[in-house]
Length: 201
View (cartoon, rainbow, N blue to C red):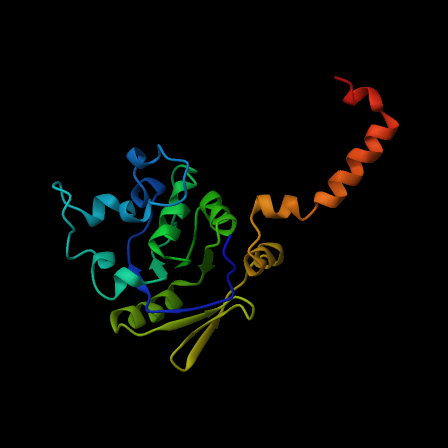
């Protein structure tokens, strides 16, 4: 998993509440178990018309927002089913930070497991940040300091210390397990010595 420390980008603003995981990545694209290739189908039904042509008015189809790494969205982002393809699609598109006033719990956790920082801010701060999207100006996210800097202003956010450390070090669930491989090997060695019959073929 890619490490996350700081991020600077012109944010894309998607002022829609209750964006569920099916809107983020529709069910027809869930056949793959690969984490790559899903970005082109992100927000598929909002980005493309019935003939598969890009809808020019949709924010992520516009320059410079088609290169945004930060998405500002309405409340309850990521609700619906627990599909992990949703953060995969965001990440493959290039979005590594989502800012909202609230997230669905499972989606929120899945973001951290895939290298995406979900930031919770109140509605007033969301509105302030959206103006930077409208003006096509960059904002700066600092995970270590837990703050977003925009213009001469900054706003603090809170992150669970363990999840924060995992993002900073680029540790997903597999990497966390591998970090304990020596302890696991030691445990297995002791167990084999104490209860050898468990290991008999």
